[in-house]
Length: 123
Image (cartoon, rainbow, N blue to C red; front, side, top):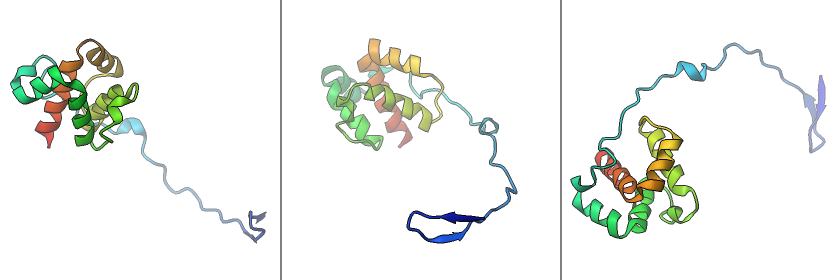
């Protein structure tokens, strides 16, 4: 079998037989856990609590930076939802996008404090 490459070099096509298939994604099971603190445990860490209450954007920027993202990420629309969902995925925490959205929409300071405490505990 002949084929022509973009740089006009002719060669023979190589075929390799498939000897194994990649594992099925559903066969990978990971143990899901809960958040280490609840959404309403804000006062467990007073510095985080005060920061989340009075300057939530600063706390969000710190969370983003600690998580390995750009510290300006929280300024982008929808980024906090992505950050919280990414945190749940990285640490195998139970939940879903809807719960993340609800927490950030209706309890933003508490959700930010929970995220900051989780990062502090896991580091």
